[in-house]
Image (cartoon, rainbow, N blue to C red; front, side, top):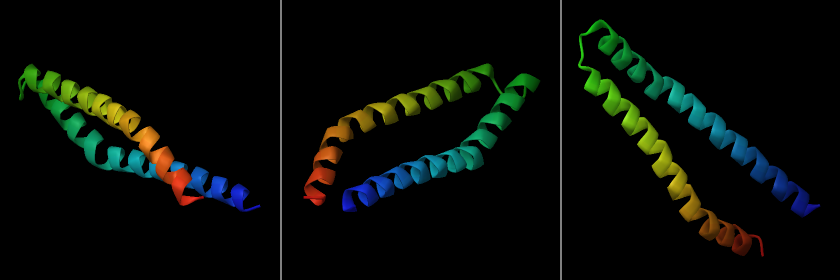
Length: 84
């Protein structure tokens, strides 16, 4: 019974973290990206700024994915140790 609730809590945490990340992305990153895109479209900002924005956004996602992969096994060990 306890294992069931532990699994349920972990599933809830996963959804909560993903939902929070989506909200933060929507509130802070998307408006700035939209403004830079609009300014580049109108010619008020150089197109290189828009290209740099795309590189930074993709690079950040790639770095986050790689970091998550590096932390996956140690995190699993920590969780297994905690529940022993």
